[in-house]
Length: 155
Image (cartoon, rainbow, N blue to C red; front, top):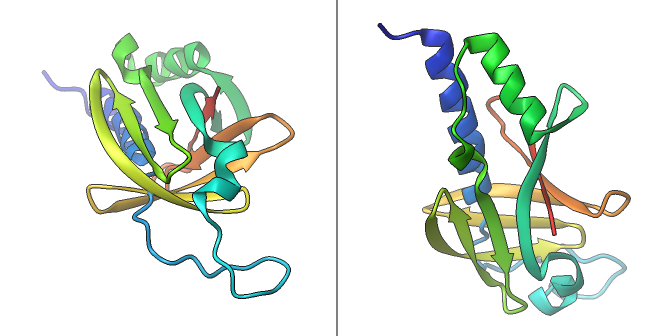
């Protein structure tokens, strides 16, 4: 018999992973200039922040930082459903040219991205996600608009 709470918890975890997929930006002209001029932010300017591989390392739920293990335990407690380890196998590899590869549960998907300072937009399969770099923690995060949960990625 199906348990709606279990299905919802698994769906939420999967949706959060998909939010990460959407983090890929679709190129486009980003005219948000900081400090004047008609310049657009290039990937080379953001390279110091986003270049390299970022791996899912934690969650922020209702303002509380959680490890992936704590998140999995919370889901199990609330729904009785154990999340498979593959749920947390998500990483983004950003290149300095504005392209990269998303790896999620063993599947790799190419992406592009644009950035504006600490923020980046990623579009995968027509879905945008918005990431923010937290310089104090050295991580990037993306918030699922449906759950309010933030997936945190670290190098």
